[in-house]
Length: 142
Image 1 (cartoon, rainbow, N blue to C red):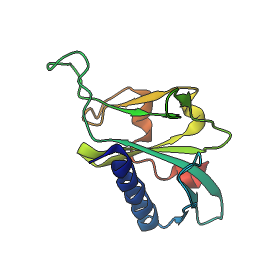
Image 2: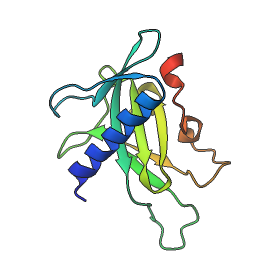
Image 3: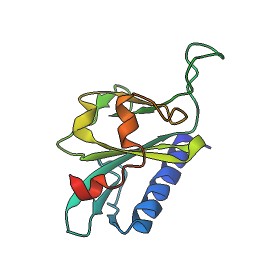
């Protein structure tokens, strides 16, 4: 599947999951915006969300790499990638397709990072992203 098509699938998976959890989802027209949707919680607070995902395990370091891990680009732009602008995005929703898991990360936690690493197979992971695994309640807290 082409990357653009895969991204669309991730967006619709996110919309469905957010709706199932009782959030309202607003989808802007066009695909040239810095956000993919706006999520509204029960109290009426709005969150601007950028949705990213990955379909493949990253095996840098060879076939016997120590950790099974996945990488999602937390950047925008076609040729020169720029970190997500946290004045325009509140939350990065990152989907790891092989394990069907979402990471719901506040944009400010990315601190200029262009990629985020995920280790969903390691329950005791100390990675910065581990605390955001399936952290859908951020839409109630932030």
